[in-house]
Amino acid sequence: MASLILEMDDKRKSHRLANEVTLLGRSDICDIPVVGVIDISREHCGVRKRDDGTYVARDLGSRNGTFINDEPVTGESELHDGDILRLGKRATYRFSNKAEREGKEVEFGVRGDTALSDALGEISSELGNKDFGSVMKDIVKQARRPGPSKPEE
Image (tube, rainbow, N blue to C red; front, side, top):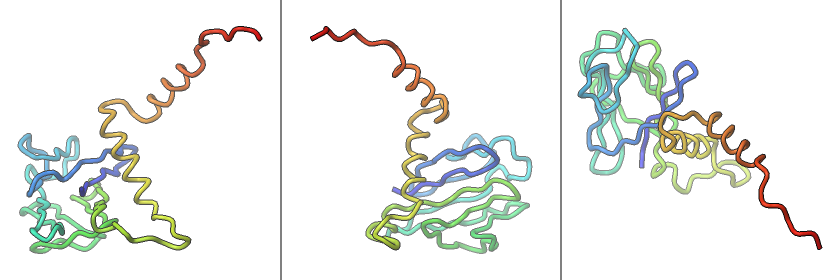
């Protein structure tokens, strides 16, 4: 399944593209709300899944534009795995499409770093409001707790 991974300031959050059309913007009706960014329109951009499984982005008449890899989106522009989708000046998302990447391997037969990034994005979305660091601290605390003592042999 494809996703958009927010990469803005210190924020990182994965959004799965589960609908045929996904709407991004400041409005409450958007599937992916962009909160606290003033140069984003209420209904800024749409991402649509085509019948063939590819994805396209369309600017919805925003004032500050939508860009893929710093190129302005005019009409429908196709998204490819690893592309950077930027709304306005700051809201930046990395497009991840596992289906497109399936079977592609890089030098030495190791998958690209997008696989790791996808996994971390999925973990963070499953964690809800907890960040990865908080979860790791909880795990370390739990590991340091004294367990039942072993009987001496």
